[in-house]
Length: 315
Image 1 (cartoon, rainbow, N blue to C red):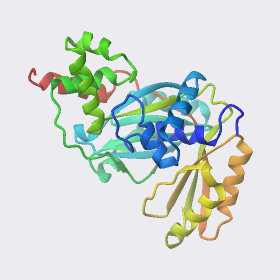
Image 2: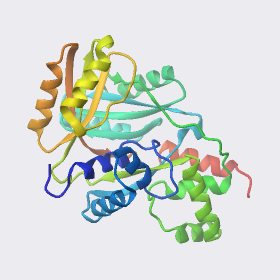
Image 3: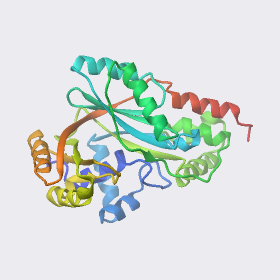
Image 4: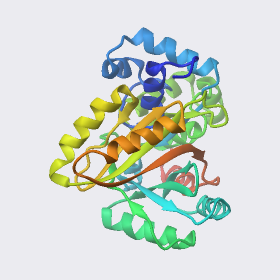
């Protein structure tokens, strides 16, 4: 592990960056109390570690992700794509930065990248993935089972929508600045933001400084397994890789993905070889995370937020 960061630091970051909407809370950061409860440490320890990650520049900034159930699109599906060259990947990503229905774009080392697609149904997600792959000049794609945005009870008024928009690209913008820009009181603004977090209308995600990842690699081991043996394989690999497994989605089907971190490509490759040696594993590959690519602004989500603001009566 990198001398500046230990395993707990990285696990905390993974909870903050890759698992948005797994946590509620009232703050502009993922709840330290909830992260601590999940990782088996106290809240103060989490706060101190987060402060260190911010001061050292490992966490670059925080971004708000709206709960897309608000736009009648409750599903988020990761679609993996592969180009024939790095230059083709660059062109493909640039073309998709302007596309609708994309939540985010993950750039991977090499010719691969992934897009997270927003949809109302799995069938719609598949059609969207096919359309976007064709737009990028690609004939094949791998669409993984969707994650579902949490259900929410709160109905939004005009100020709520304005707050979502104000926080979207800078979750740490001062409350007093938002209040001044919207022409409302500090108290109304503070209360509104807290309610948005508590109701899971919005979530916050930490963004890594991809140019200075402190010697860490984030990657996934992507396996095709014998489905009846899936649970046993998952348990064996979790035991073998230990705390370096920060997520293993429990999706039905033959695809098993484990998300890990390490401090060398060699260690990551050894993990894949270890996984391929397990009985019941038919094939596999490895994907190294390089960084997030921002969609072009205003994105389709930004335009949808503006439409919601304009259609709401004044409060």
